[in-house]
Structures are given as C-alpha cells and as structure tokens.
Amino acid sequence: MSSLEGVEQPAKCDVLVIGGGPAGSTISTLLVEKGWRVVLLEKDHHPRFHIGESLLPMNLPILTRLGVLEEVAKIGLIKPGIEISSPGPPGRSHTFYFENTLDQDYPYAFEVRRSEFDALLLANSVTRGVAVHQGVKVTDVTFQKGGASVVRARTEDGSERNWQAGFVVDASGRDALLSTRLGLKERNEKHNSAAIFAHFKNALRREGRDEGNIALYWFEHGWFWMIPLADGTMSVGAVCWPDYLKTRRGGLDEFFWETIRLCPGVAQRLESSELVRPATATGNFSYWSRRMWGEGYLLIGDAYAFIDPVFSSGVYLAMHSATLAVDAVDSCVREGRTATAALRRYEKRVLRGMRTLSWFIYRFTTPAMQNLFMAPRNTLSMEQAVLSVLSGDVFRKNGLALPIALFKTLYYLVATVNLGRSWGAYRRRKQNRAPVHPANTDGTGPRPV
Image (cartoon, rainbow, N blue to C red; front, side, top):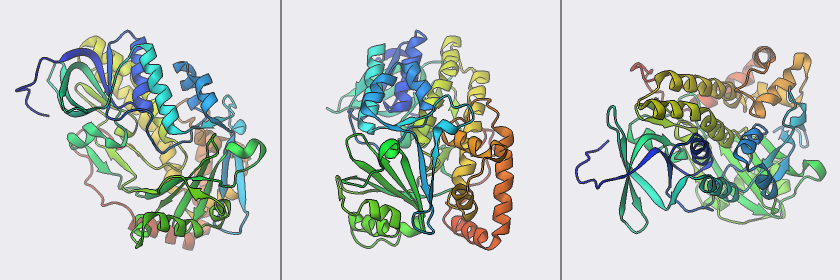
C-alpha cells in the first residue's frame, strides 16, 4: 500500500489486529490461546460510546469460551425475547421468546451498554496476554509478497510506531480500514438505509420478565428499536429510508422527536422522557467488501460488511466471525503463507450465515413480512425456525433448512395475495437503493448477500 522507505525497524509479532471492538478482542484472545504473539491496535480509549447494545442468544457460547459470561451478566440486562409491533392498529404486537427456538439451548441474551461491554472484552484480552495499544491509529499497511507485512501507526502525541506482522486481521468495524484503502468497499446495491439514534431517560419500560426485551416498531418510513439498559437508560433509534432523512430542515434532535411522533407506540413510551445525549445520524448503513481475505490479511465483522441493525446481529456476527477465523489465521501463520483452503472454508461459512440473515433483513419492512410476524403459526416448526434465525443460530447444521424454506414459500404466497401493497413496497425500496455496481468479474470472491 506504500513504500517502505524511511520506515524504522519495526517491532515483530505473529498477528496484528486492527481494532479493539468485539471482533478484535475476540480473535486476539483466541489466537493467544493458540500460542501466537498478538498485537492489537485500537485508535480510541475504552470505555467509549458505541451503538448496538443488544446481544443475541448465540453470543452466550462465545462469551463462555472467552471466560467472561459471568462478568457480562453483571453489567447486562437479561433479554428473554423480542417484541414486534405493527404500524397498523395501536397495541397490535407479538412477543417472541428465545426459549421457543428449535434446540432451546440458549433461552436468553443480554442488553449491554457497549462502552462497558467492549471495555470488558478488551480488558480480558490484556489479561490473556494480548499486547493491546490504545490511542494508536493505523495509518498504513504494506503487504510484502511471500513475507511479513509492515503496519504503520500514529500515537496521540504524533509519534510513529511500526510493527512487522506475519498476518494482519482487520477488525476496524465500520471504519473498514483495509477494505477502504484497498479499494474493496462498496455500497450494498440490495439494501440501503440510514439511522437516527439517541439515549433517553425516564422512558416507559415493560414489567416483569419482559423488562429486558428489545422492542421493534414498524412505521411509515422504516422501523424503530427500543433497547432497555440495566442503568435505566433506553437506547432508541429509527432506521429509515434515505429519502426520508433528506426531508430534515431543522436540528437533528428536533427532527428525531418529529420522527418519534410518527410512531404512536414509541411516542407513548417516550412521552415523559428526555434525551441523555444529543441525537446522532448515520447514513450508508449497508456496505460490503469485494474481498474477505488476501495474501497476508483477513477482514472480519463490520470491517468486511454490515447489512442492517434490525435483528441485532452486528455484535454477534462480529464475534462469531472472529471465532471462525481463528483456525484460518492459525493455519496462515503456522504455514508461513496464505492458507487458501482454510480461508475459503472460513469465507464459505460466514457468507452462508449472512445470506440467511439478509433474506429476512431485506424483507423486514414489507407488508407480507409484517402480516406473518403479527400472526405467527408454528406449523411444521416454521415459527421456531424463524426464531432460531433471529437468535443467531445460522451457522450450525441444526435442522433449519426445511422449515425456513417453507416459511419463504409462505412469504411469497402472502406477498402475491397482497400484490398491490407488495409492489408498492418493492418500488419504494428500489428507489432508495444505492447505485448498482458492476458484477464482480475479477475473481475476487462472491458477494456476501
């Protein structure tokens, strides 16, 4: 990516991980267990604010493997299920409980404040032997064919640090550092959305076992999330069509309140609340990279792709892709070269899980999907199978294929019966998609979704 001229003699490590979020902390901890010298560079200092506070049940075995499940339980709020509300008649909703998935191994998840959760995972990496450097921003990576790579970084005082790494893992999240620098990052032509979000205090919470449930609300321009946190705060966000966000004229806080008033269910729960921090907006929510790996590097989690936050899959996909990547990276470092077969096996598994989730994500706002979620039936285990997908169980061989295929067939039948509404929803989604990119013809790998 740049010339090595002027670079001081770098420190050496077996694997260098860029990014100290859930993906970076997970893979670095597990690679140290394999006996490798791992350096992790994080541009910020933990704790730091981050959105995406809702975990999935399938996070639990990963947290157990990392040895942090009990610590997470202390900072988290138990999340037994998902409440989904219709944009139609007020009060029309359904709650899906994770205890009703097909295998019922993991009947709950956690809602967590990400500043605490991410700091906990990073501290665990340090305890396990990862050389963590915070406040160090990677500025360049030079890949050398058949040899180690040189990673350049800058500290907060402006000085330059350099490392020579046998392998580089990009876990930089939505920064997508390598993907951007290598010209691999593209908008997802199948999906596009933007989001406004903030934290509130004094929001109305559910009672009893439902207190920790995430709540999703459809409304005219997209959908809302409401995520209760253990300290009484409520994370609230609206994921909208980009054309709706373009209608904003005033300040972002004011526009967010206007958007909230468009969804009676959310407005009612926030009637006596107030913002804890100013609202934040982000666009270009959905993207992917034309490669997942190359000679000397691998992209994991959001550094490779991000689809949509609707099913709270971001943290889980980041951590699970990290666990899957460990063996592939181990093979690359052990063999001293790119272990193509191991990396391709990893890529195949990741893409399979992402495709399963993305089918539901792309159709979440359609009238047909709304009808099916508001009137669930467990005929031939379809409801259990869908709930298993929503719990994150998309990577194991678990008997989902047939009931999910039946659910998809039912979806298309419902969409056909409601052809007028379905066509209108399709046209709006198509109008809001990012520009379509040319087909991938250079042999760099398959599209993720």
